[in-house]
Length: 290
Image 1 (cartoon, rainbow, N blue to C red):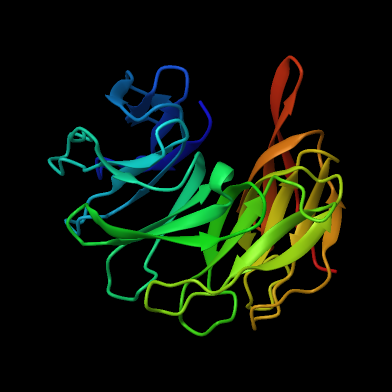
Image 2 (image 1 turned 90 degrees about the vertical axis):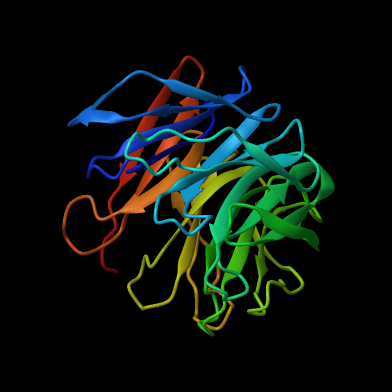
């Protein structure tokens, strides 16, 4: 399993689990049966080598659907929720994207009230945007250049103009260093030219998470620096640019990040999953006022 999501898939008030299974070319859904307990796995075929999964209502029926991206078949798979309270899904429909997609995100890039999809395509060094039709399908694809080997995409309104923007985390060396690419949305489904931000020559970034880490009202980005055990943080200025990168000391080999106020002090904290030979762990870094 590469990425896992938690959301209420059958609308019973409990968080359920969805996951991608790279080795068996499918996704799994497990419905919550109580606090931290889950029923059996329901599996649905995907494309080859699925790498990431997300959820959103892509057909406008009020129920969360699932969308997964498959590295080996260069497509996204859409699973429409049957919306009958069972937490089950229809078989996949697919839409092609770029070469070797690693990650995806949903968002409304053209402000029509319908969810669109953006993917990070590692081996074509670009992103694919496909605009949602509102019925669970996506329109024509548009390729947008990113940095070298993008592996993760995150969405936010970086310049606070009311139009959704994108950050792409690049796992390939560009001019001797690793970069995060910022692409500003035009509100019509398009993304502007990538502006690359240096996050360090030994970072080897993996995942990222958006949050307002300094509580100034502007979205920020934290990155998992797998290569040098750091968490580079890009503090947004609210105009599409960022303060100089601050690299926090992280756990060993951080792979993915999430954020929430875990201790109730009003400051967002970071949760990092780590991968060390023979074990996988979760590390927590508490946010604080500086």
